[in-house]
Picture: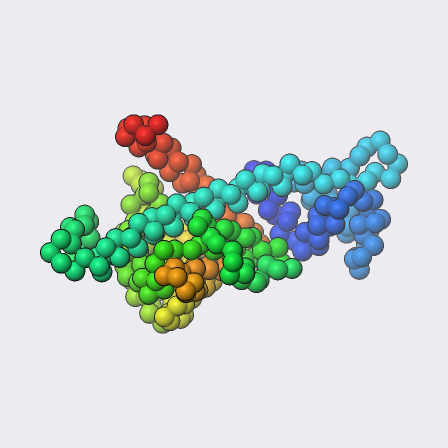
Length: 123
Length: 169
């Protein structure tokens, strides 16, 4: 669990942390703000925050006394890119399926002697 | 949230659309095909046809076991040189426009995804495919999304090589 992406996933595998992240998309929050909706101790919330911080998902300002928690949007860009890569792979697979379907249609319509020989198909 | 809804019929998917669900560890995929439901179904249930497109391009897929019917099972292996990725599962349900199957990468045999493939007749000779894959944890789902990243990159290079050889570039 050392690579950054795995840390991001592990951090987001927890429903409370996902909810915290969702709330941080609206803007920065203090730890007290973040803790308010949950029936857990401040300490537990701090633990969750530490995991999110270690994953690079959030940062906490050192200067301001309230030390608001800030969501690092770039990490989400990384995830978006990676979902896009998954989508592209699926699309490549479906493009191959398009080709198979086109050949099936040719086979069905071309019942005459002109039916093309296909390479590699077992008959 | 609208994630569980099938998008309205005016939306077209000439290219694959993916949605990673926020609430359950699942992925949706939509894609329209210029073929009938029966044809798209056959391309999924017939082993010879399935092997032609499941890919990826850079790997050679061979099907060891194939019984695509309710209560059937499958296993296929994608190979490239020394590399080998085997996938297997069962088909709890196979109907005229629906396939429900389990999906496991043998490298993580205890992580089993449940996939529901539904084909919808769009009424103009075209068919919409909706795939819904649900994993047993968000970690497994995200792992699935991330898997094949490397394959994808290799494949991209392979395509590029081919285009260069063919002079398309």
